[in-house]
Length: 267
Image (cartoon, rainbow, N blue to C red; front, side, top):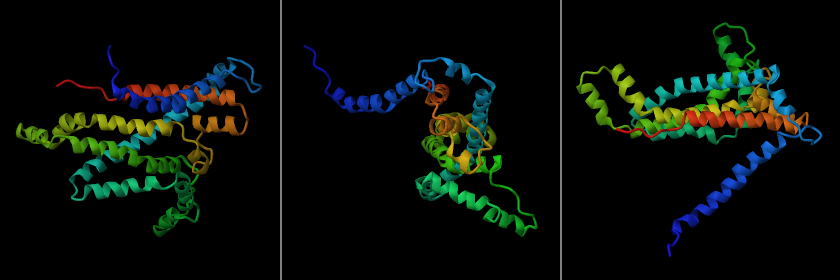
């Protein structure tokens, strides 16, 4: 008689955890998406989602998530590359990650003070003779704060990918006459692409459903799907419509994870 592998026993807690905290909530959200505000079964929530109002919110969510991810990538890649060249790179990396330990709400309120009319940002502008500007409650302040919050999550996977890269490949590229730019394009970028994909995942997906910063930093000038979900669950009490938006948000996240997942490459 064939015996079961004892290692499978250790999968039980993992399977139970996934079932309770991943599968069950998704099923519950899907269930509520078919209910109207009175608790009756309906398909109208899915019909309403494809109206101009919600389609505009969807476009806005993807637009701002794309900008936040793009700026994070443009700053994070050269920063991660520079960190690998520094003597105490792990110490500098820890200092970059350190702000992630601070509560998001505290950081948002800190930036309200910085970008306020009498805050540090306007005080800095006045040094150069520039009159105080309305920095808070603008697209700039929203994207700036979001990039500040998410950029450590983009730096870390790229840094890890750069650290794992075989330095002899760079030496071989230079020995074959490739310029620094050519080496970067043909060697460094392809070998760190998995790190970039991981960084895009951990930034784009949460940026897609931001709602706290849209209220505190953007002053509700930026409306996203996360904002709409919050409004439907906490204000209008239309849990069905909120759940429907969440279903499409989950689908979008699943597609993004599939597109950006790391694939094994043969050599």
